Image (cartoon, rainbow, N blue to C red; front, side):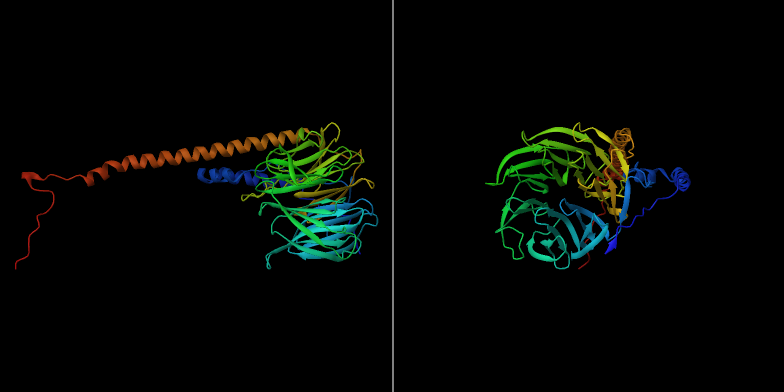
Length: 446
């Protein structure tokens, strides 16, 4: 077993960062205007690039693989299951002993992991690129033993469980469908059988969650920016709820209140849906480009990973450093806590008062004490960073428009200057004494 390493990597000193900023400023002054324009088009980042973390409330840091992403907690055994992007392995970490119990590699990338806390079965979506296939794998939560696999569409698959009806839903935004796997006889045994049903709820479904108590399935589409509410008993659509831009996996549900939480990355907010009325009752501003989310049902707090990188961005990649803590009753942001580079997945263990954060670019999972004394930065920086990012986006758009107008003006002026010459070349020229402008053709002697 591997211990939960109580270590934390601190970034560069403020003096080093300050000197680098001064050198960077001097270089910017010296570069030509055209390069400055291109630099502006590439974007800026106002997010901090260092993390100065005190011991409390961070209890420890686990290094067990590269680029941890999705996580799930068995609330009965207090096992934490971590899906890694590189390699595609799943790690079982015992939250009571602080030791890694097992790890199992299932492919090149593990895109999602969920757990049933009653049967202690772990469900993983994993991709193998060389074979160009993806599978839904069922593991024993105590040992990591592989029990069952079934093919699923290849892509950024996400998982949701109906633990009462023993249905696993797998969303695939690339294929544009949701596959419902019904486990005949349940999934507690070692011999499993499934029946697959293809469902369609929008062109790019990704975020997905189930309320097993009400038999309601919630599917978020990243391109249409809506959440579809589905009746599990007949797979019919009950409602479509407009939400913020680019709702992502995971959707989370508070089983006590029935509220559904939707992380909207591009609009930089968390939308709260009332499960009874199917309406958005709150839009909570968070730091730029959030991704992961967890709800601690014991304290009512909501934790959002501020990844800081635009989903599917092709340009320069920024990296967030914080999680945002939200009051689950008033929905007021309480503040932020620095945890590491590019926080992604978040999971909560209410009984242990533990929050786990996967910091993707730090290749670490951070264990945090969910204490009311948690030292948080004020909520003002959230609004300031959002305003700054909005201003930068407007500035970038203005620069693009200005550049295009300058280019159009330059092309127009060039064409205007060359146009008289082209017209002169195309018109016949008169020579003195009525001579034709073209030479006379003479036939060769016979």
